Image 1 (cartoon, rainbow, N blue to C red):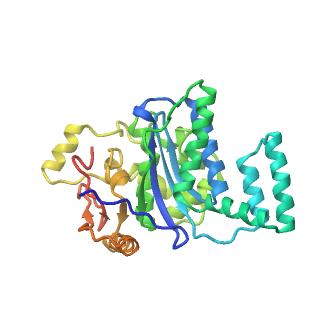
Image 2: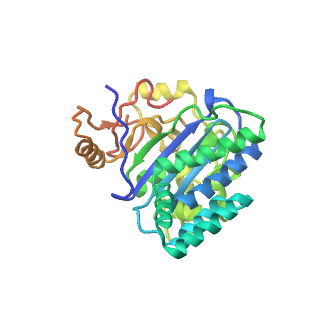
Image 3: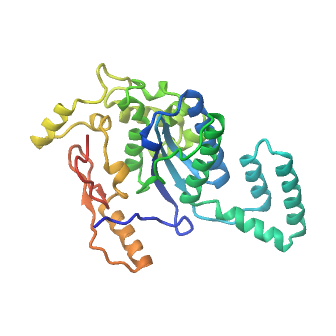
Length: 328
């Protein structure tokens, strides 16, 4: 029986998700200009929805993003108007006229104003709405500029609920940033423009804040030093031939029951990071499963699965067992 997707409502508690979405048929559709627009849309929609981008990577046929969904709190009218303008930085005449009408409603505090507030707030502080809005807006831009029609994305999106612990988040963030290394696009994530770490190195304060939080550091200098240790092991620079290990080497270690350094494992595809549904300690996974059962009344015989101990994960568990090779 397939384990159900677990979703924690943002108004119940703050939650962190690792999300991934692929293009239709896995086609390599995004060149560098297209990835640049995708990056801008990511920041624009996250600002509108009031969610934090912890880290991300954009490549030619998919993207990864780690997003923190905050608790829902009241949003003042001035902030709602600011976010509306963020979503429409170059408004058409119709949009500008609509905004003037909305401002009149808000000043009068009439029933139309309350209805508009509710419509706006439904789009904010929610993972599904954030991903839907982000992907829809980009699809419209991409199809319009490429004289294309039809679906752009292969599926809705995958998401894994991540325990908000430094060790777990650091590892997932490094896995996301190393996507360009696994794909052979760069030897060092800092040299790949379309990932969070490179943008942090370039000075983006918002992504620096996200990486500082996962590294448990209060300064960017401290966070960068700690993060590079995770990316490259004991040294701060890429090693020669430090790309993805060969399948034969990997399976040899697995068959012999051995372990690999974390830096080597992160250069493999770890399917539990994208298909595990919930990832963290056994207590965390059990808690999320209990929340789901209480909300839905379902009683599936699901239980946390131990991630294969190919490296020192500690007590990490996942909700969903991955079929086939968990790491490849």
